[in-house]
Image 1 (tube, one colour):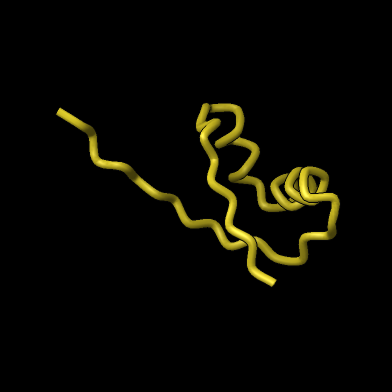
Image 2: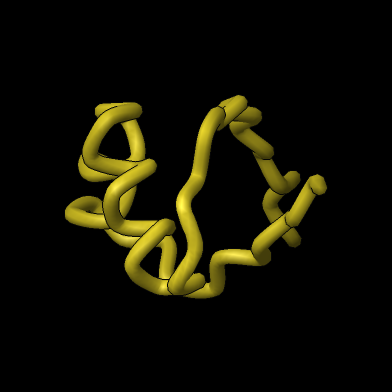
Amino acid sequence: MLIQIANPLYDVVFKGLMQDLDTAKTLISFILEMKVLEITVKWICFPSIV
């Protein structure tokens, strides 16, 4: 099962937590109330609006 979560809370602390995969799995498991077995990180850069 693949779940994609949109993250509107893109701040320094959350980004730092997500860079540590063990912490990210624990946090996302807690939020989803199910065990997360694997995480693949994809950083998305949005172009700036001028």
